[in-house]
Length: 248
Image 1: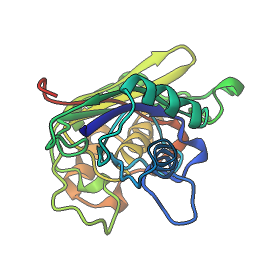
Image 2 (image 1 turned 30 degrees about the horizontal axis):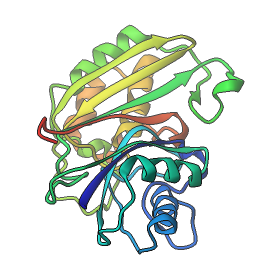
Image 3 (image 1 turned 180 degrees about the vertical axis):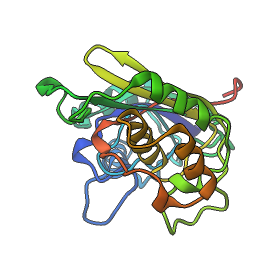
C-alpha cells in the first residue's frame, strides 16, 4: 500500500502532548498501539506537529508506511481504528499519498485558536482559559495587526530549543467574540514552541491596559523572551487547520 495519511482530531486534556514519551500517555503512543493491534506490525506514525501537554487539535494529520501488503480496505481500517481508540481521539479519514509525502514538512500553513472568557463556563471546562477581567478586544486587534508586520518572533519562543530560525510568516491574527468567549486566531507558515500561548498572554496584557501598542513593538524588537507576557495555560489552545499543497 505504501504511505497513508490519517486525518484526525483529539482532545488533549488526558495526554502529555502528541509525541511518544516513555511511561506517559500521548496521542501518538495511543494511535500507534491501536494500529499495531489491527495490523499486527510495529508502526511509526509521524504527526504534522508536536502539540504540548493539554493542547487540543481539531484538525491534525499524520502519515505512516504500511509494510505488509495484506492491508484491509481503508474504510474497514478506519472503522476498526475508531472502535479501538478512546473517545477523545477520532480518525476522520485515511487515504493514500505519494511515498514522499510528509505530514509535517509538506504543510504550508497552520492555524491555531486560543479561547478565553471572563465567565465561569462549566460545560467548557478544559477547553478555554478563564480570565478575571474583560479585555478591550478592539485594542487587542490593533495589537494583533502589529504582529503581522514582523517575522522574527524570538521574544515569544521557548528558550533553549533546537530550532534553526525564529522567523515565521504570519498571514492572519485577530480576536473575535464567539458566544461567551473571546477567540484569538493566528495563521502562519510555521510556529515556534510555546509561541501562540506567549503571544496570547502578551496581547491580553494590551487588552487589560498593562501594555501599550508601542510597548508591544518594543517587546518584539527586543528579541527577548523575558520581555513578553506570560504563557497562557494549554487548555485554551486548539490547532484548528493544517494546510497542504493542492496535489496532496
